[in-house]
Length: 330
Image (cartoon, rainbow, N blue to C red; front, side, top):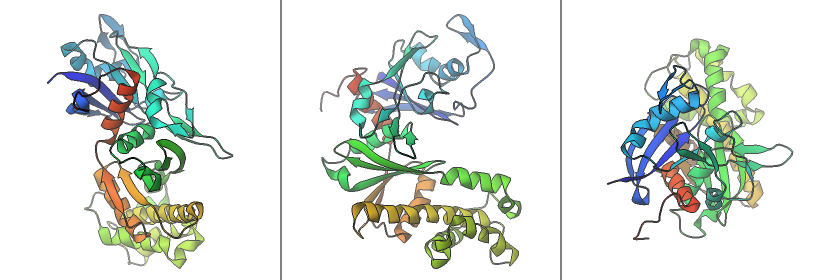
């Protein structure tokens, strides 16, 4: 089966490349550690020219052989590659942002291989505390494409990660989203604070320790806020109540618990209802499972995990841009 599209999910720390056939079927995929903040530096010859540009080098490493096999394959990319620090800036689109229409607003850069790379714009929510996303809008589209019409209006789409996003959608538009720096805060605390000094990492997931952290965040003890409860990750170790190997998962549960407690409060207030929306999670399966456990504890009863959201979203945007054709059976 011949490929129809090369789709790139190009973030801060990683580059994922997909070779897609008709209908968006994944023929081959690769993952490289060549995010925009850690690009290759060793020069090499590309298309007869010596090149030391990190973006060109990473692009050639990710899919140069695919383009050798099928010259002229269209290429689409989402994520931080379109940021001000990326290969070519693709200006944000304001909320409410129709995610399907982002495909007609692509920014294009010509690569050394002579192939145009079409970059998806991000989304900005303008307020006294602005919020932005790059890459998540494409994943949201990938989810929406598989939902029945109108079903997304009572769904909250969660994208756990270094900067977790919680996205509200209405009539195919991103209307509001919140960002929590939970993953990055966990990394900073574990690597650069006193909390990491007594942690023993690398052990198997400790569900009991994780659940304990979640429940502390949700308890009356957690009402004082994370800046106070975080110290328990150290004090419980000092008193012998939390082993060194359990401390990372306890800290993870504590941070995620505080994130989701705040999310639940905000959702009830916005909806003027005690009932919480259904949740669709997108992302790493292991991390999403942590969030699923914590979401259920927070009262979010309906939680599902979406698969291949990025690939599906990029295919839909390529369709909208006219880079590929619709599957004949659709």
